[in-house]
Length: 427
Image 1 (cartoon, rainbow, N blue to C red):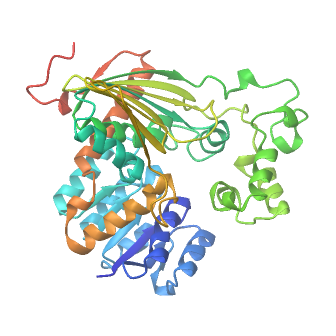
Image 2 (spheres, one colour):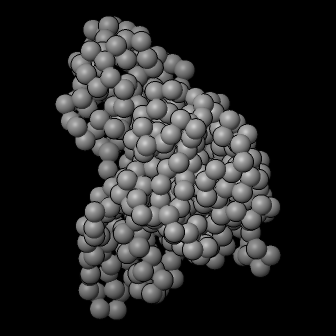
Image 3 (cartoon, rainbow, N blue to C red):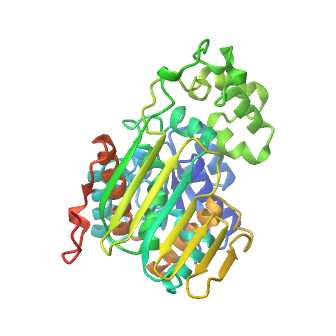
């Protein structure tokens, strides 16, 4: 069976997931595209040969028609997830929803309830569950190689340029326009911890702040835009330097450069930096999300996990240390090394490679997620999808609790409604 897909939101994420149909035309095909931006809509629709009758200028226009496809890939902006997800589920579409589910806890719960009420397959794009690296970590944990998990240290090195691009100048710069940086960037990571520990989170605390990207750190002589700035050449966050480097590197054309401009020429980049948000000084003000944050999670079975997200790093894979009663695991996103406490021996698994899709986005997770979702729709075997909406809701509740704790100065937040009745005391 070839699964028919409608893509709602023709930006980077929607286009990335739609790419699965190019790789596997016998398994999936794109038959509809909805996006209010004519350029984005046309580019994606043209790439997949979508006829005019399958092109819509809004999700509402698509939803006004009877169901056109087996499933929908919903990759609209964060604050436009809840309403279309519920409406499209009501129409009978299976839904692959880009993370986060929604920017508020109430909306997340409502989307989860809509999926359960309608009976459609609702899958959240927690792509880290689908990588070869995660598979290796999960095999060691589930096989008992570490014994009982006592603690996890998990690090998300966002990267100085990535943070400036997405969370200072970009769409996720303000919590009231999208969500907290933790929810936007690290609901992936909180979900990953939930998956690896395979237990219910019961308590969360967090500290962090917007340490650097604010007017108080603006250098003398800085201008409102990098193109006009006297100190631009000495600034680590120069938009001129970064996006011109992207222009010279075809691997970075689709992302992040195409987010800035569809005119991939020197003149097009300069015009975008002159007129658009990506040319603004990072110290100009207006952004308000945390640039460095640490989270501690306690699970019902007694394990604890810490997650640190930081802008002030080179970009790279997540890194993890897992401490168990019988062994220790350390991973860098590509290699997994396990130390056995009985023998003292170490074994390293290299998770790189493994086929044409292994090097795709998020360490192969993007295409592996799409493969699982499409197969689940085609066969009705929902076990192909590794996280149901309730598990995804757990990870989002962890993020909301962490943000409440951070804003309260690190006061722990108990997740009463997710704790089982026989959970150990958390006080």
